[in-house]
Length: 71
Image (cartoon, rainbow, N blue to C red):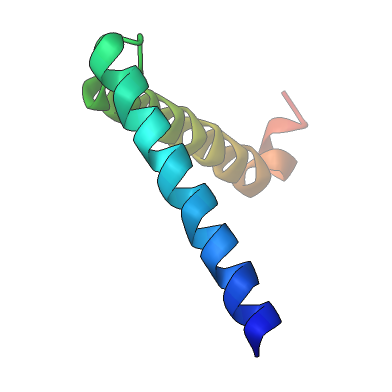
């Protein structure tokens, strides 16, 4: 049991140290150029729109494929 407690202590100590280092770095450099929430929303909407358009085109082509082949 002592070995497990020592491992747990080291893991918790490492995690808290990393967290504190990250918080200290964020205080030193508050603007790190992270992607804003608005940018993510715009990208998700654009990709979703493109997938919907491509899916619609695929459905229309597969539905009318036989009729279009005679043109």
